[in-house]
Image 1 (cartoon, rainbow over the protein chains, first blue to last red):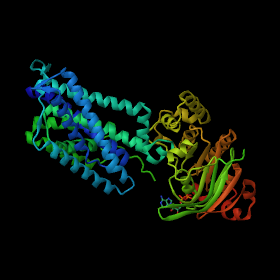
Image 2 (cartoon, protein in one colour; image 1 turned 90 degrees about the vertical axis):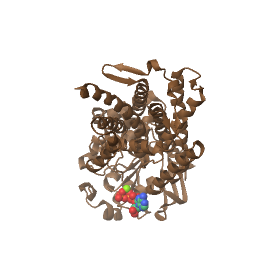
Image 3 (cartoon, helix red, strand yellow; image 1 turned 180 degrees about the vertical axis):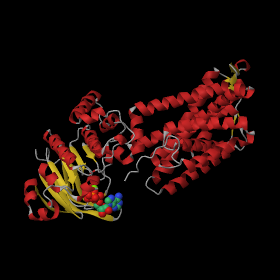
Image 4 (cartoon, rainbow over the protein chains, first blue to last red; image 1 turned 60 degrees about the vertical axis):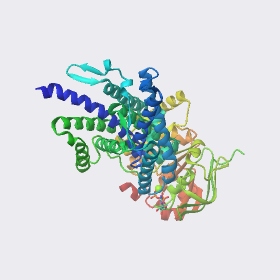
Length: 310
Length: 249
Ligand SMILES: Nc1ncnc2c1ncn2[C@@H]1O[C@H](COP(=O)(O)OP(=O)(O)OP(=O)(O)O)[C@@H](O)[C@H]1O
Ligand SMILES: [Mg+2]
């Protein structure tokens, strides 16, 4: 009884938190795949850089473990600056590691992405060290508001912030993709890149825009997870990248709504698994899902094959 | 200077990588004309259009748009100079609505109000598209996709409209209808350069025609003269009903 009334809603909330983050990461994979047909291995590192940026903003705005300004403003700055820095790094990788290989075989692009991933990891390792950086969230969120009771569910303020921010960003992206001219150009480019150039779309600029958006969302995810788990190190991108990739495949790689759905489902599935199975199974769940999807429905939940262009 | 061609090819040699596909191509299209480029499979018709759009590599020769040499310019700049295309297989954006496809045709335009009016004009020209306005492109029939591709191209208000085999895959009745519309669009002032295998249909509405054979132009004349040409009759005009094997596929 207790399990269903208390544990279940609690794990659903936890799953939603994690799922929102997975969704944000998955969007970056899926958008780049949609246009370039490439798996951007370096995306996990973009996320990791977002995490470090968030940590640095918090660090620079703190004195003796106390923030020097309004806590909400600090959190907002952490997220916004992380998004900006990650977007900038994402654009650099596109410009120097991917664009020169646009007409090369896919495998070259894939290897280049792998190289960028290793390069960024080592760059951060070199300048930031191997030790995890700890987010002093106590300075941001006072004891009195740390826990919020919603009926049987107890939710930490941090989780609430993560849920609100992730779902706000996803809603913003959805509107942008659906309604704006740039959003339409992005969809057109993903569906038929050459035809998009034939109606006058500057495809190079659209690709840059895709890297900006995907990387910014990845960076936001990095900082949000930093707030949630209160630490970041140079290697966090690996695990997060795999989760985001799994979410993208689960939803149907190439589809933005699919990435959102896949992320949330993966997060919830993981949290429920923890409820019913030993905690050690948490990560196994993600990969079990990945393998099952690849076997029985490689196009994912909302992925529908568009006829290949001739 | 009134008779400056909208489009002019001068000694064009075009390549895919190191494979030459077009040999010393010369032709011009004047304002208001409907000119067709005829030829069998793999003769280089689509390549000619891709060369205009800057997709193929040009080794020798020049392409002029309204007197300005445009070789080597990026596709976007060619489009900005008033070129629009109804490509082979229509290339409708499959997961965008009919309305969105039309809006994309006007991507480079900033006069929103006029675009809205012109979309209405397209709906008047092709009433079926109005009914399908919010349907995804992929759900349209071949004939409807052809209309949509035409509407999309017209919405850029092109100086020259390129069409690649508008008859492909359409039933004879739809082909007739399609060609009537092409003729009507041309009468209203749009200059058209059309690639076709269906020579008799194309020549029935064109002003002039060029004939392409394995990458070279072997014949050019007025449409009337080509229809009466002995070699044309033998090689391209075959059955008088104007059908060719492409229609059966
Ligand atoms: N992307 C490409 N790379 C290499 N060769 C190509 C490419 N596209 C076309 N070709 C070759 O160029 C030649 C001309 O092709 P093109 O598509 O221009 O013919 P076409 O006249 O349009 O034929 P169809 O009536 O079948 O459409 C063919 O031999 C074709 O194999
Ligand atoms: Mg062709």
